Each structure stands twice: as structure tokens, then as C-alpha cells.
Length: 194
Image (cartoon, rainbow, N blue to C red; front, side, top):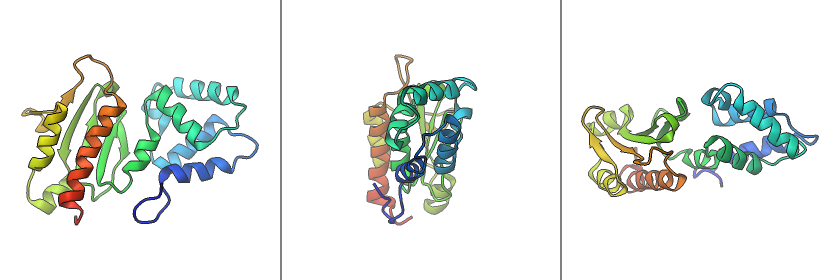
């Protein structure tokens, strides 16, 4: 799945790097590939020992011969970080802050999605770039309506639209996907020129 601008997606770049390890791959090499391609440190997003031990166990079980797709699936299941979804955000003009660091962020992104500790809550706000380009510090009405339909509400004290899972559990991937699709639709329909 290449980007609209014809460049290789992050998932494709990861696959290409993974394929270069014909004799098998170590957890250090997997973490380095993720750092190189996705521009964040998987180990610093999580407990310091757990990711390495989990990755070592997974690689040992699979004989250290795994594909990029298998690693992405394992990372999503073990650490709740969906690398395929992050790859799909490339070029979407959406910044994502999760696991205490920026997972995706570009200078000309229009909206920021911040997830809280344990992915239990989410807040959506315009970026400084959006504010500078539109002169408005508020989300567009069509985005507000879409977010309210999903269960978001405006929180005056943080100046953002906010959702918190009433069950106190991480927000499901399906809900994250609906949120991102709502934002992408608004960008496509009204702000693709920015």
C-alpha cells in the first residue's frame, strides 16, 4: 500500500528491511528497524524490560525467521501498537501522540490525536498549522458532528473534543479506526489543499 505521492509506505519499508535478514533477525534488529522506519522507540513506549523479553520469546518461537507483517501483528497484539495503522496515517495530515511519544507527526499536519495512559481516553484538537492556515482554533463543524456521533464531547478545561472509555479499558482498534476515518473524511472534503 504505497502513499498517494508514490513513495513506499512505512509497512513496505519495514518489509524490505526485514527481508534483508536471510539468516534470521534479533529483537535488537527488529527494534532498530521500527525506530528507523516509524521514527519512534518501541522500547521507550513500554516497560523497559517487557518489550525485549516479549520480542525475544516471539522470535525464538518462530525460529528468528519472520516477516514484517508477522512482526506488525505481534506488536499490535503484545503492545497495542498498530504499526499497519500508523503506516496508513502517513500523508494523512494527522499527528498521533500515544504511549507518551509522537508516533506520527509532521509540520503540516492539520489535527492532533492524543491518547492517554493505557489508551483509555482520546482527545482531538487542531494543530498550530491548521490554526495558522484557517485562522480558527476550533475544529470544523463537520468534524465536531462526526466526533459527537462517535461519543466525543467538548471539554472546556482542555479545549479539545474528548472521549474516555466508560469501561476504563483501552479504546478498541475499531473505535480508533472510526475516529481516524472521520478526521480523514473532513480533511479530504474540506482541507486537502492545505
